[in-house]
Image (cartoon, rainbow, N blue to C red; front, side, top):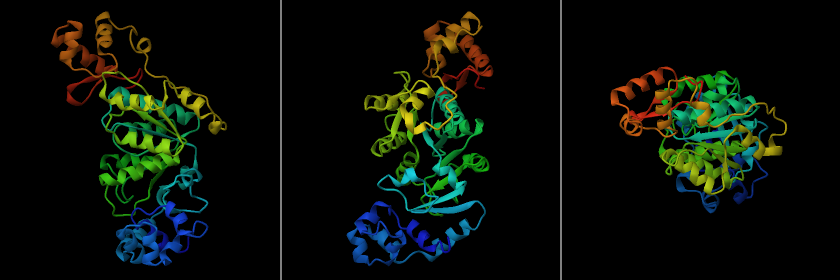
Length: 373
C-alpha cells in the first residue's frame, strides 16, 4: 500500500462500513472515493454528522498515531477489495472497510470456528471450551474469539495448546490490549502464527458500545459460532444472533437447569441453535464446508460415568455425585450428603489438589474435566 492515509481516514469515520458503498453507488470503485463526496452526498447515505465530519476533516493527529502504530514490524492494514481481505467477511452487510491487524493477516482467511461465552464461567465450562478448541484445532479449524476473560481466553488457549492458529478480535484500538491481563496471551497468539484484529483505530478505548461491532466481525469471520456457558443477558448471545443473521451456523452446549450460565445456551437451542455434545456434532453440521479439513479428533461433553468412580473412596464418590455439574457451596454439599462441614471442606481440598474440582467465585465449588489440572 503506497499511502495508507485515505484508508486510515475511512477507519476513523465512526460507523462507516461496506454497506454504505452500495448506497453511494460506488461499490465497484475504491471506498476511498467516499473522501471525495460532498457533505450533502454523504448525508444522503444516512451517515451521522460525526462520521461526515471525520471524512471531510480527518484528524491529522489521529492519522499520525495510526501511521506510527503501522510502522512497527508485523502490523498492517487489511483493506476492502484487497487480496488479504477475508472472503467470508465480505458477505456480511456491515463489513468493515479497514481492519488493523497484528500478526499473520492470512490467518483471517483460514476456516474458523468462533468460541464465545461467559466472562465468569464455571471451571467446568472453562475446561469444556478449552477441550473443544483443542479438538477442532486438531481437525484443522482456526479458533476465533474476543480475547475476553473466561470462555474467550479458554478457546484461544485451547487452540494454542493444540499447536494451531487463533484469531482475537478486539473492541478497541490495537495499541491497547484489553483486558490488560491478557497482554501475554495476545503476544502468544501473534507469536504462534495467529492474529489480533480490530476495525477500530489507535487510541479508541474498550467502551461498551464497541463490543457489538467487534462481535459481528467474530461471527463474520467464522463458518460457525459455538457458545459455551452464557447468561440470558450476555454479549455472547449478541454474537450468536449476529451469526444467525449472517447465515452462519450457531452451536450451543447445554448444561444443568440449575446453572444460570446454561440458560443462554438453552435459549439458543430453543431458537434453533444446534445442540452440541461432541466436536463431531459441529463437523457433521458444517458438512461440505469442512470437506477439506483433517477430521481426526472428537471432544466429548462431560459424562458422569467418565468423571466419577475412578478408584476414589466411596465418600469422595458420594461428594462428587452430590456436586454434579452445577457449582455448589459447602453448605449445600453438607445438606446433600449429610457429611460434617469440616469433612466436606477437607475432602474438597483433596479433590481440588488432585484436579477433580476447582473453587470459583463466591466460595462455590465446581467440577473439572478429567485430566485437567
